[in-house]
Length: 194
View (spheres, rainbow, N blue to C red):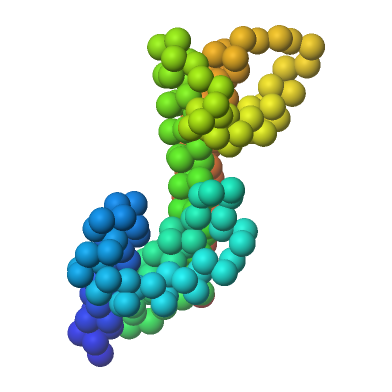
């Protein structure tokens, strides 16, 4: 019985890898419409598109539905590996897996946000500060979070560069605290006796 669940876990892992390649190919239009891209599209798109219908996974132009889709595959693969190794699966392990998927989505959003803020800060430090085009779009992504963070500093005025630095520091701190918190919660859930 363990061999069957190991095989299922392996097949799911391979499918997850195919989905990852499919998502990466969408970033390169020429590769996306190549023969391998079309084959992967036929295999992976029905599954990936199922997650695209959840609007809460989309933030402006950024779509995190592939992260959720691959997270579910990772959870299923982990459950099958757990069953193969121990002959059963506990509710705590399933809940821990769900917590890990939630953090995977949230953590990915924070990481991408931190990268955007870091790019914007570097551009500002190089005195290549453009307010239109791509940089303006980055500012529209960063502004709501930056404004919320800066509202914590009542009656204080900072330069744009300093505000970006503070926002990046807050994003990194959120990433570290979130990673620890969700990891701790997942460990607690995984250790449940049922």
